[in-house]
Length: 405
Image (cartoon, rainbow, N blue to C red):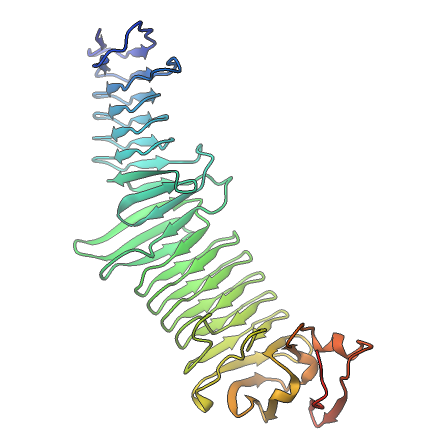
């Protein structure tokens, strides 16, 4: 049986067959040279689905291949193709085609023209990876995209990610989620440019990337290289990774992590948290610059387990450029008697850990991460069982060595 409407007129073809045997070579569906509506196997019995082959030919066709592992050829014209479920091979061929990515492991080749793959109806997050790989859901299925210029994710699900962390060689990316643009640079044949819509998060390459977020709460990772990352609006998490990075939170309440290297962090507006160190280096032989900007900012110079910037004596420290007494906070590891203050310098035992610019500060501005718990120092002052005692010395306040937190 051949369903063939190959003529100059428009046509509609349905594969609504009911078979009492399982054909090994199901018939192909041929459109016309006009604007066709072509439908593959939509309602198979539970025990069998048909693998259709559909040809759109010329004209602006609508093709829905339905169930099964189908092969679709859009032909010339600006076609709309819905692969449906199954592991499909979809060829847009000539024209500016719109292809809906469905369930299954699909291979989608847009062909000539300006082509779009739209996942907005798929109720799963997608992860766009190098070489046109798209992981869907929790890695349940994978598409391979070729000759595609625009990728649209579902705006109603979170976690849509551009993940370039496995890119090799000299490849680096320029991403602006606000402008929905992605440039893949450093390729042997030049630069590839894409439009990317409804993505939340970005992971950079091992080289120097440029990453800009949007109004959502973005997770932005630079990975290797000397990256420049800006969060824009939203409560963003920004991690520069290795290299000497420039991180800008801009608006809202952001969390900035310089990680490895000599980094520059600027929280911008909002109540931001800034730390220049990574989970393994802890600031060893790093000199980071931390700018809180406006708002009540928290600068992390230590945690429950470790002080930061220890081991290099005066060769590793955080420079805090705009500390505001009574507004911003410092978090330090351990207890007050571990620290000494010399002018604007903070020393952990014999190690310089920070130089604080801006206005003078006092111990009310410090959170000590003690052995068991830590509280802001203002809370400890009124805590009835604490052995805390305050002695004012100039603009600073010191604690006796009986402090137990």
